[in-house]
Amino acid sequence: MNCKDWEERIALSAGGDLDPALEAEVRQHLAECAGCRGLAGSIEDSLTLLRSAHEEPIAAGHYAAVRARVLDRVARERRPWRRWVWAAGLAAGLAVAGVFLAMRSAEKPKVFVAAVRPRVAQEVPVRPVEPVAATVPARRPRPRRTVAPRPPQPVEPLVVKLITNDPNVVIYWIADRKEEKE
Amino acid sequence: MTALASPAMAPPLDGTEAATTMVEAARSGDLAAFDSLMRRHERLVLGTALRLLGKMEDAQDASQEVFLRLYRNLGKLQASPNLAGWLYRVTVNVCRDARGRRPEETSVEAAAELVSPGADPQQTATRNERQRVLRLSLRLLSGQERAALVLRDLEGLSTGEVAEILGTSQATVRSQIFQARIKIKGFVERYFRRRA
Image (cartoon, rainbow over the protein chains, first blue to last red):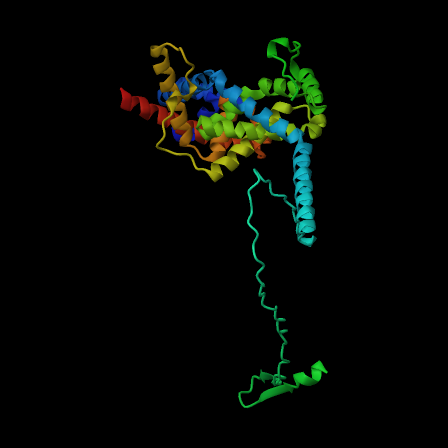
């Protein structure tokens, strides 16, 4: 077994992942091989560096931000009825508006006539006016519009052309649409 | 909304019993209990999502989704005492979906997102450096390698737990973390050799 074959065991030994029997073999080899001792030392050093970096505390604000976001979402998820209330209110409002518009359009327009009595500020002497014969043109009755009946349009028969696989065979189906109406 | 209790006012419960109590209270509509449940597991969810996705903004979106799923599944969690395992599984799935929708940007180097305000500048530089190495090295890994390494080496779960969360065998997980560790070691060596 050359040193390359020891690499995996040494790497696992550096993290304490070997069973005792294999661990003892690795220890024995390390005692005899300076190159593998260097490899084991390098792996242990790099793991120590990574662990020390990982153990450094994360700023408390990062945790607090996550908690706040989660609690906000949870609070929203716990109150689904609020969304239903909003939706129901909106639907009711739309229904009322629809009914109101429908009633307005159904009503006939009413004409309100206001009788206004003009105020007179002061008495003005009025000269007597000679009566003049008023000529009001007689109102002509409007001619009623009559709609002339349309002449019957010729109805073309319905033609369906069926094309078969054989180019020499074409099937025509003609249906009289006037008969259908009757 | 129900008034939220501050964590200082929450009863001093711990372990599975406390989580079960919180789940029961949250299920009955107690938002304060659900808030406590989130506080209890937020490091697990956001920290894992950040390593799987690489960006704080994406990790926050994923965490939000995970906690919403938790809320919606509170009724089903009664028979599942391993809430942490459930959360890891959902986090991995949500992050997998998120990565599928939006591939990770390679040009953005937002290392300052983990820095708390008021930190010492010298210390900040070192932290930023470490965060940068972590983020860049995780980008080298495939999705499965990344998930296996994050859960096993960064979150400290056992190989069996990782296999259960990822829905695979322990042998597959071991193979994935072996590959991932070799890639990470190579990247870290190259990174610091270049910087030297």
